[in-house]
Length: 415
Ligand code: ASP
Ligand code: MG
Image (cartoon, rainbow, N blue to C red; front, side, top):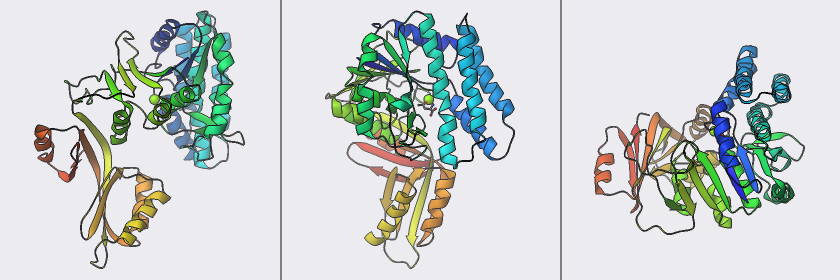
């Protein structure tokens, strides 16, 4: 059996849904599980609606616009619309009442923002049925069990794999359509797995079902060695070892969610990245392999923040002080993208998140003199050569640089 994942860009309009259905219908009529994200920018819109509502603002106009966007897609796709319209309208009614719930922000976020995937999966499922496919819609929350870390829930693998294995019967009979990004706690509350988490959901289903492969359908030709918007000469990798792909996601390549590789690599399940506009292109195959010489891989990670801590009494930075810094990072779940120390200071670069950075600085100022810069870009060049080394080290506004034999990193001003 195979797993396919389609993101918001593939499902952003009626034409996209029809194209996704064409890809699905070109496959054998069973043993395919399809994971979908919310349509277009729905997740961003739901986030905005929730933020407006929490600030006491009026949301009915924004909510109405989002409902209209989905109903127009329904209108274009279906001749007989009554059932599907009703289902979509019901989910929007749930969002409206959900917004009045008195819950902690993160918990409420998951109850509301998760609805985007429910809507898109319902629309795709009904569309496939209208095309005579034997499609079953399943609620991913009944299969993916998580803890209560709302907005970045951790998967309970034992329970989840037990649940997912029960899908085998359904899959033998036809295609299964489900949602990415969402799960459920022990007490039945919806959770989400972190933004862009649908790739990870596809990996969860693929790994528990011991799928033959997981395919992520994207708006690019495959995994590329650089962002084609910045580098028009970027090339598509034909194949990549799991480890190389995992490192790329760590450095900020956004083509695959960072958590996707591990569950597949540990079970030796192939991961394909393919173009949904042009399914005949080979795309990139990520699997256990050795590739002789990979071209340089260039990743720009924007919106970075550099924090430097100095001991207030001119002392050297000690292990004990480093542990204070790491404890503070751990306490607010922030991870370091690059770090460097000198005799009297320790500097590190993290993703800029306003509230987390403010919280972190407040904690660090208890023990250190803290300086920070925001609006930075971390450039990583893996498999770099001399020309890259000269080019990037000489860039204007370099605040920090670091290199190993294979990887060069520079942190520069500007986004
Ligand atoms: N819809 C969610 C998001 O936009 C999950 C995903 O797209 O993977 O973050
Ligand atoms: Mg998405």
